[in-house]
Image (cartoon, rainbow, N blue to C red):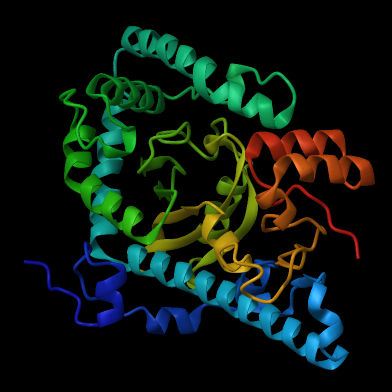
Length: 383
């Protein structure tokens, strides 16, 4: 039996892992340089350009000093909330990577992926045709909406047998079962990968659901192959070194974690994530260590929803005494938002008319905002 965690906080966050993992020492060893590398949302978030725009109708009733103090208090509380949230993600990633389950899954899934690379070429060719059709119906239109240009299928279609087999098989099996692929534990295709997946997926999916992860990946450190994904998107089974997502934010993050395994955890700023249709995603990764070296990498993929909830105060601007137009927003070093604009959240039509009239957003940026459904990482803020 696996020993159940005794720490209340660990039990609450990772109930399904059930293994006692002491990560406090590893957190302590997390380098300051690594945390600073995540220039927007990591430990130094308090120093970022979290700005309060003021538009209170009742401000005349208050002294200027009181108003400024109130705005500063709101700004500080939101910054602390963001910092706490990101630190929590770091802890989650470290706990997942430190769990014996991660090492076991990496070994077994790695062997299973190797078997898939030896599948008959004619079988893979047939599955590739099916996968191309699925991409053209689903992924490519989403990417083209955001990018505003034709996206050749070859830029996202994997070339490896394992990736083609896994993506096509699991998408088809989920469709036949009438469920989301995230909910499918076993494609019942008789492969060793599916047998192993049926064991680990329910536990990893439960963790991802409980902690609000958009996706959870396990990547082989040597081959850079994505061995496992909760969502089974276009990256599962692919090589981040040679495949369609080589050079992506995900690929460079995994490279950094493998090279600097002693740093413990690495975080990447919100950026377009192609497997999710170029919608922005935050990536947090930690190494699965074997004798001090990275054997695999756990990658937590997070949508900006929770960041938005924290920064916007769950959309309760007036309750936070920000009036009819005041807001708190997060800005990155590229002067682009990392959270949604209040105007965009409350009235998208009015937002479009306002920014078009002001000329503050280009036509390309506005199209991307509409397609991605967020202003995060797209809208530029001056001043």
